[in-house]
Amino acid sequence: MSNLSPADRIIVPLDVPTEKDALALVDRLPDVGFWKVGLELFVSTGGTVLRQLKERNKRIFLDLKFHDIPNTMAGACRAAARYGVDLLTIHAAAGKVALEASQKAALEGATAAGCPPPNLIAITLLTSIPPRALAFELKIPLELNDYALQMAILAQESGLAGAVCSPQEASQLRSVCGEDFLLVTPGVRPTWAEAGDQKRSLTPLEAIQAGANYLVIGRPITAADDPAAAFARICEEMGK
Image (cartoon, rainbow, N blue to C red; front, side, top):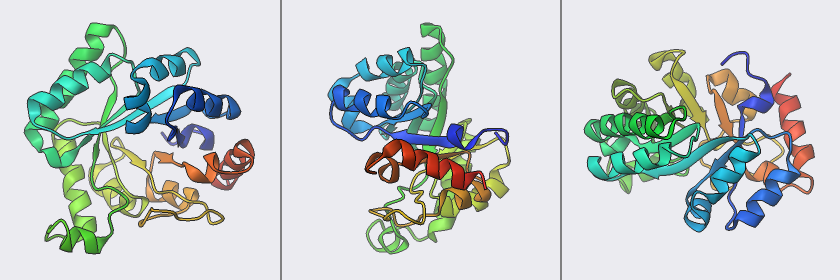
């Protein structure tokens, strides 16, 4: 992973409601090779937009955050793996049985479809949740960093390829889980961009230095007056 270029490390989310909007954004950013498809776009378009991205030789982060009983999660991962996506998310909080079942099913689905299996990565804790909400709303009696670490360890013990975490937890997760464990960090913001609803953020360069493999960067790029220029600026800053 250390030999990845800054452009290869950035995943841009397609947080738009239609396939037309999604492909228009992809065409405006020809240098972006890795795209995230989340709930809104997938529910709107199903697998159609995924096939369009594959035809354009793009990598796909299918961010559906499955969280259900083990049998249901396994079925969903088996089906999602048939699309040939590169990354697929499930919630670590679903528990070890569900995580192991999902990993096994994803391999089965990819094998049946004749495509490489996705890297299954676990959601540790949504980056929109601050420590106070973890304690007082979710009633979890752990420090936020400790909770994220426990979820990552559970994912690793269950055979998953990695985890999604805030950039502020990346350093600790990297030191505990080792170099082969993928870390994907949303909530990354350049110094010149607004934080928005991200509560636990770092700059792109800081996130990479903390141990992140991939950075999900949305509005600083997609909402910019010139998205291509914003993407190039972030890549330049990361390369310093």
